[in-house]
Structures are given as C-alpha cells and as structure tokens.
Image (cartoon, rainbow, N blue to C red; front, side):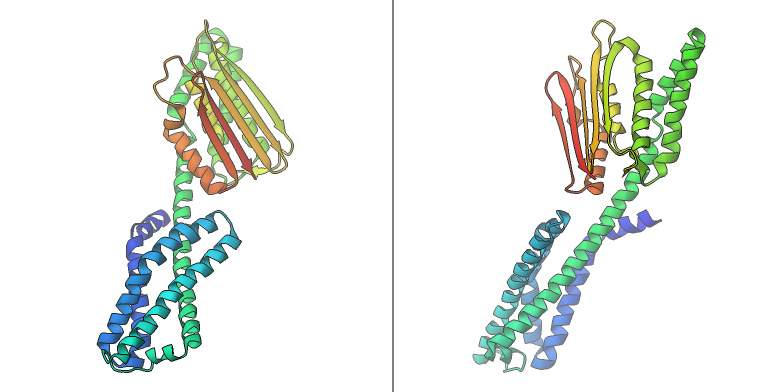
Length: 345
C-alpha cells in the first residue's frame, strides 16, 4: 500500500509542481490586486512574473541546489541558494520598475503597490524576501519528492533482496549435486548439505534485516564460495583473502553476493584449462575494500559491466546506501573481469 501511494505521488510530480505554481500565481495576484484595483494590470504582472521565474526556478532547484544537497555540500548549497534568490529577486524587482514605468506613461492607473519603486531600497528588500520565500518552498517540495523517491527505491530493493534470497538455478544445481554425491560419497554430500543449509538460513532470516554484522556477511560469502568450490572442484581455482579488523561493524545484508556470484557464473570451468577467481576483502577503520577478479571465457558474449540486472541493482543500491561514499569500478581487461569496490562506512 505504501509503495502504491509513493508511486502515485511520483507519477503525479508534474501535477504537483503545476499546483505549486498555480498557488504562487494566486498568492501574487491576491497580494497585488488590493493595492492596484486593476484586474488587467494585476493579472498581467502575475502571469509575466510567473513565466519569467518558472524555468530558471524549476531547472536550478533540481540541477543545482538538489545536486549540492545530494553531495552533502552544505556550504555550496547555501551559496547557490543565495545566488538563486538574487536571480529571482532581480526579476521581481525588474518587473516592479517596469510596471511603475507603465503607470507613469498612463498605460495603467497609478497604484500604491508599484509606487514602491520610488523607494529602491525598500523595493529590493521586498523583492528578495519574496524570492527567498519562493525558493524555500521550491526546495522543500524538491526535497520531499526526493525523499519519496528514495523511499520507493528502498522498498524496491527490499523486494529485490527477498527475491534474491533464493536463486532457483543455483538451488537446483546444488541439490542435484548433493543427490549425485549421495550415491558416491555420503560424507561429502552431508558436508555440502550443511554448507548449503547455512546459506539458505542466512538468506531467509538475515536477508530481511536492515543491517547485519560484517562477520555474518563474510561467513555467508565464505559458505557460498565453499559450496561453489565443492561443486566445481578441479575445474577452477579460487584464491580468497580476508582481512577484517572489526567484525562487529554493521552493514546492509546481501550487499556483496552479486559480485561473488557473477565471478563464478562467468569464469570458464574446465579440467584441462581451469579458470580462476581471486577475491580480496579488507576492512580497516571505516574503510572497506572488495576486489574480485575472474578469468574470462575465450568467447564472451558481452562485457560483464553491461549484463545482468544484479549488477545494475547493486550499483543503484550502493548509490542509495552510500551516496558519495563509495567507488565501484568494473573493468574488462580482455582476459579477465575485475571489480573494485571501496566504501567509506
């Protein structure tokens, strides 16, 4: 229900801003009319002013102010907001003088409102205070919509996380392998089953949590690697390296599995020419670094960085969870795929 409401709000974003500008138009009209007693002059002034500030206000609030807030640059945001207010205030001030000039030419009857132009300092204060109010409302509206978008994305990723918890293809392959092993080596089949049950347990229970300990996430990755090594045996070589300083650090669940899963998926598997996977996972202080490199099939259909929904979803999830505090590089060297992820927790 919440997801539906948020989607409806976002789908009507254009209507929300249209309503906002209609309100601004009405506010200006109601403010000016009692002091002019001219419907034509008040309407012309309000419409011209709205048309003049609509495009710069709409564009700059999204492309300039919102970007500064996303990057968490408060000083830059304040500076841009003030410059933005000066621009809007200058437009408003210009129209005050313009209509005062029209009244001096008797195009419209003299009015109390536009006579403010006789006192430039007072007119400037009025114009810039009005522009600050307009910009504050626009920014508030922008930030509210951005918050709703982030909530929608969080809900989507929660669903994607739940969907990712059980990969049918991987599940059936492992169960089939266990079935075959049961006929040949019951002890090994039992060990593989235990490892796989740990994976399922983690996905089913910890996958629903917002945060898990780094120790739990790393153990899940180790279990996944063990199961895959078990399955492929001498058809590929896996070289994992783990260096964890603080295992109690909290991180989002199932954040790294896509990178490990893709490495096994895209690595060639052959007894005569085994592929390789190198995994390096390090954490020191608030810095976390994951590097994954795997050999590439001789005839790969696509570049790894452009395939699969998993990588795209993970990249977007990182943008939401660690905006401006992570760096993800995916490289195709021609003979191998390399992934480097750094996060400042």
